[in-house]
Length: 232
Image (cartoon, rainbow, N blue to C red; front, side, top):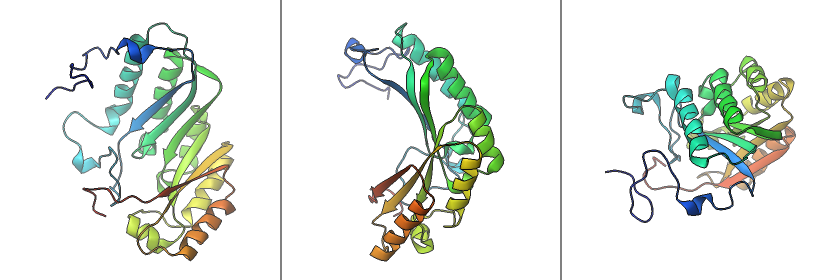
């Protein structure tokens, strides 16, 4: 069944937007969200648009994903016309974006810059799992233009991580934060999840203290939501 707009009309093949969506274009901040839908394993609470290697059908692969994203960036430029739209923030989320080679993420960022232009001081973030990066990867990521990393820490307690089906150990987070700073990143976020079954107040306090001990400049805390259709 073809995709349709809210009014029931089919989505144009060229990606054209209705005039109402273009009102005020250029008069408000402009940003990009790039979704990378790949994960090594699917966590039991996750209902995001993500795929493991065994779930991918024909025509989709990590190897070709950067080229697909670049094609969409170029289509966005055509659809939005010649409006001056310097990009103030870029956020690459997932999934686990850092399953792609840093050069691929850099090529997507370069396409955004070439088509729209990055504003001076633009914040460029990627999400990452603590086990998905090492010192070499982080150095390259900084080299290709990323300025901020958001790590899925979730908890500092092993039994909580096990319920969430996260694969890193608590000690991995301070290690990767240290590597991230050494690679030249000044901005680091740590994501936490609270309300996991079996998590006590002391567990949550320990996670907060562990996150703050790494001295990130931002911490995000999310209440666990048990979504229909997930293993949890």
